[in-house]
Amino acid sequence: LKLPFVSGPWGASAAMPVKVQPPFQPALEKFCREEPLSLDEVLEVKSLLESKGSLDYSRAKCKDSRGKSTGPFSASAANAKGDHSGSSMFGSWLRDNCIIAYGIWLTDPDGAGGDDAVACLNAIATFLLTYQSHKMELVINGHKAVKGDEKTWMDRPHIRFIGETGKEDTKWYNHKQNDALGYFLWARCQLALAGKMPFTGEHLKLCGQLFDFLRVIECWDDLDAGHWEEHSAQHASSLGPVLAATRSFQQVLRTNPGWLFPGKSDTLTLLETKLEGALKQILPNEVITPYRNAKDADGALIFLCYPLDVVDQAVGAQILERIETITGHIAVCRYRKDSYWSKDYKELYADPTKHFTDEELKERDANIKIGEEAQWCLFDPMISAYYGKLYQRTKKEDFLKKQQLYLARALAAITGDDCEFGAWMCAEAFYLAKGKWQPNDNTPLVWTMVDLKMAIYEMEISLGGCGKPSSSSCTVS
Image (cartoon, rainbow, N blue to C red; front, side, top):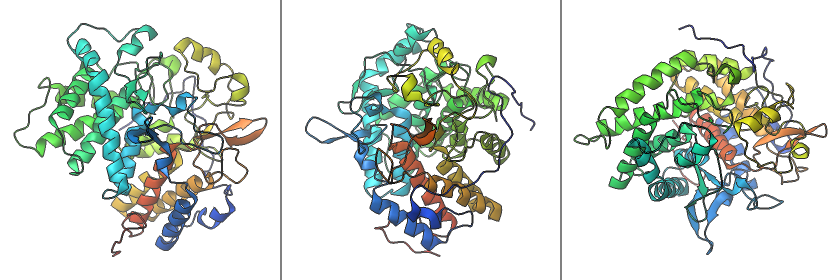
C-alpha cells in the first residue's frame, strides 16, 4: 500500500539517528543504554522508580471538599511548587483520564490500579450522563448544529470537566475533540471485555448516544481540534480512537448474544466503513485536510499503534519512520513548528495555560522556528511499548533493541535533582528557557507517568516476566 506523503507547511525533515542522552538522574545511568536490559534489571528499575514516587499517579487523584477521591485525575499532579489548582491543568480531561485508566488497569488489573480505573471511568460516565447526554440528543435529532465556528464548540459533549465536583466547567473551551470521546468508548469496552467492569444499562445507553453523535456529525470528515486541542483539521489521531472504539463495541456485542446496539442499527457498520476509508487516505500523515494545517509527522499517531492497535504493521512502520523526523535529543516533538511551550514560552505568554482560537493560533505559530519546539515525554514510552508488542509477536531481536532504546530515552528524561518542580518526576515536556532545556510547568504529568508504567510492563513481558506489581507474585517461565 503506497500512502501519500505530505510536504506542506510542516514538511518533515530528514531523521537524525535516535540516541539516548545521559540521564538527568545519575542513578538511572546503568539502565539508560541501548543494549537490552535483563528481566532482573527491569524489575530493579521499576522498584527504584516506585521508591522515588516517579510512578505514583495517586498524587493526581481529584478530591472533594472532604478530601475523598472522586474518581478522575487532574492532568498534572502536585509537585514541589504547588498543586496546579490555580491553573487549567487541574482540570480532568477525558483523553488523559481514559488512557490513564487503561494503563493502570493493564499494569495492575487485580489491585488498586484496576479499582482506580473503574472509579475513573465511572466518574466520566456519570459526568457525561448528567451534563452532556441531552446535548447529544439535540444534535442526534437535528435540533442543534455543532459544526460551525468557535461559538458552537461549547455545544458539543465536553471533553474536560471539574474533577473535584464532577460538574461541567462553564468557561469557554474547544470541546470539538472526537478522539476524547473515542478514547472513553474504547477504554470502557476494554474493561468490560476483560470482565473488570461489566456494562450497565445506563452505560450502554451512553455508548449508543456517543456513537450516534459521532455518526451524525460525520466524524470521519469533521474538522476537530485533535489530541492537541489546536488547528481545526481532519486528524488521523482523532479517527483512530473512534475506529478502535467501534471495533471494541462490536466485540462486546459478539460476546453477549442477544444484545442489540442501543442506537441506530447501522451506526457501527457505517462508522467502521467511513473511518477505515478516511484513515487509508490520510495515514501515515496526521493531517492532509485542510492543506494549510497539513502535518506529515505527529507524535499523536503512536497511540494508533499502541495501545489502540488500529493499524497494521506496515502502516505502523511508516508512522514510526515519520516520528523519527520529530525526535529530539531528550524526547519527541508533537509536530514540527509546534508553538506550544516553544522557546521562552512563559515570557511570551503570561498565562501558559491559555486556550487559543484558530485565529489566535496563527499569531502564536508565527513565533516558532524549527528546532525550538518543546520535546514531549509522552511518546518515547509508547514507542517502546509498541516495539515490545512487535517483538512479542515476531521475536525479532531488532524490535527488542528498539524497545530498549526508547525505554532508555524515557528513563533518561526523568527530572534531576535541580528541577524546580522536584526530582524523579515524569515531565510533560522539556522546553528552551533562556537557552537551557528544562521541564515545563505541567510537571509531573500523569499521562507520562502511566505511559512509562505501560512501557515497563511491556518490557517485562518481552523478557519473560508477567508485568504484575512488585507486591504480586508470578511465575516466570
